[in-house]
Image (cartoon, rainbow, N blue to C red):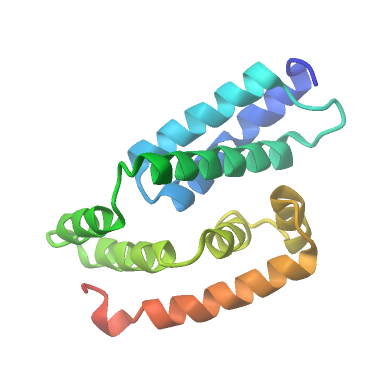
Length: 167
């Protein structure tokens, strides 16, 4: 791998808005999403990518791996207890409009999903990737993506209830 070619840089620039949404879907926090996006782009610029790699797919894969590394680091350092994150989210949504409450409730439900299910669902449902593209990004078979998404949808229904979206 070498530095990015001009065409790879252009392709990466074209992917940034989608990649940022993906970062947000992983982190659930705008500041962390920005940090994750920056770390991903820095890694891509520093490490480069294979000549034959699709810049979009490669950048999502790198992003996923950077996020997994961050989660592992957080776990080791025990910097951010999960209960603190949940508390912060519930307090921040109390005075917002009804639509923002709905989004926050869905975000909380998404956070309850195992990381593999959340990643698969985010790639397909939020980013609009095909199952095959998501499988390539996550480096798993297509059938694994399909089953993760099915389990994610089932789990979301258990964790999210529109009638109780404030709690």
